[in-house]
Length: 424
Image (cartoon, rainbow, N blue to C red; front, side, top):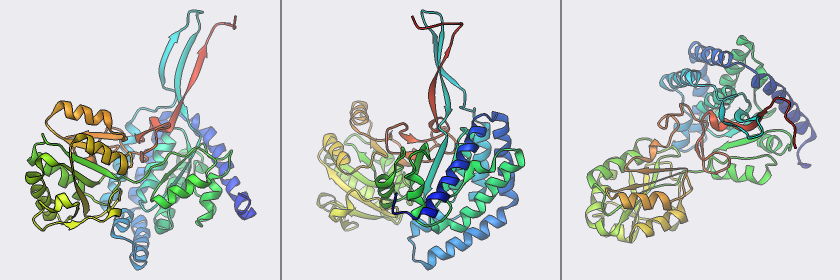
């Protein structure tokens, strides 16, 4: 980190020191006090809604003026409904059991002492993310409920929105008697601040980046702390030869078109060659009617009736985040699995079939944080899976895989309870 300005290193260490000290207080805070903060924060967002929306409008205008993509502008947008969704999520998190101190297993050993495993906070978590100002609230709420302090580094495109939200986070903490420094942001919005934050070996206990490939690759190159990647979602659905085509068509359209600019949106449909002559026209017609451009392999083009365009090599493994979908005909289930292994991102993969044995083979053979059978990829989401709000979807396997809720923001330690026991 020697190339970084010394002033930035000093400021970053000060931020991390304050966060560490706040984490000690937060780790001992009662569940009732943390819940009181969550409710107070929800009230603060409601009363401060006009301030939030005004700040967000500045960010939206700047994004449009800068020629940002439609997907990014969509992720950046906050409106009345979005704020109400945040308020609802805060109440849901408050209603969840506090994971801190929960005993997950235990037994009495033959020598007579008891051993338990219990959940404890991770400590200080760094969130580095782009667009999505809602992440500012979701991440802080989940991290603090799990007893952690958090350093939030949002993207410059959401600077005004995030600044307004972080001010409300800190003021609501102060109002209930929790340390304001449990929520902080880096000393500067410059990109160098990310490197300064993640390259302090004794700083963060965990960094969670959410954003594009360039951001995550950069963090992985410079980080000297543990990193859980919330990487791109190149999600596939395989329409098996035994699929219910009417159902499959409905699921595919939902997975692609319901909200195309998010990581669990469908990016590629794989169609079994045995049913391509019937399935491809149905799927292409339905996607086209939903304003989705279909980019297709040669075998798909042969059945598409002129409603698809030829796929280019870089369309494979592409996270479009738009009303664009790849369609590719595969020979069979094994070919589908091979395709996913080559082009997937371990986010969400699915099969559409009435063949139970085929569904089992697929679920056993695919590597993804969530596997769906006869369902939309859009269901790989914390709220759909019963977690409430999520901090993101991990595409790495240590120590979490898939949507990360409260439990994923803690770790387990051993607790030994004896009565004068000693090692023999």
